[in-house]
Image 1 (cartoon, helix red, strand yellow):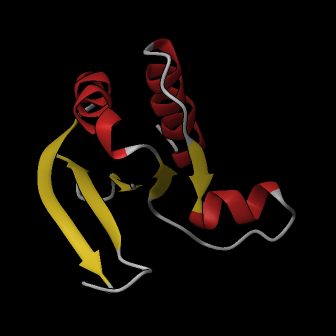
Image 2 (image 1 turned 180 degrees about the vertical axis):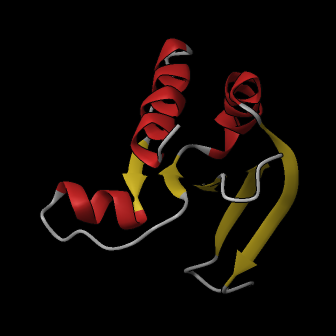
Amino acid sequence: MNLREELDAVLAAIRDCGIDYAICGGMALAVHGHPRFTEDLDLLIQEEDLDQVKAAVAPLGFQIETGWLTFGVGTESETRLYRLKSRLPTKTVWFLT
C-alpha cells in the first residue's frame, strides 16, 4: 500500500467513527500544490478522541504506541503530539492534539 492509499484508509476509519480531523504536514502541503517528500501521515484531532482513533486505525496495522511528545511545556503555546507506528518501519501516524 502506498502512502496515499494508507492516508485514504486511515481517514475512512476516522470518518466512520464520526471524528473531526485535519490533515497536516507534507500531505497537506501536497494538497495545496507544494509537494514534498514525506514518509508519514500527520493528522490533527481532539485529544479526547485519541483512544477512539487508536482503536479505529489498529486494524490497519497502527498498533505500536510510542507515546506523547510535548513542546513548549508550561507556555501558552504548549503543544502535544502523539505518535502511533505500524509494525512496518515506514508507517507512522502523528496526531497533533
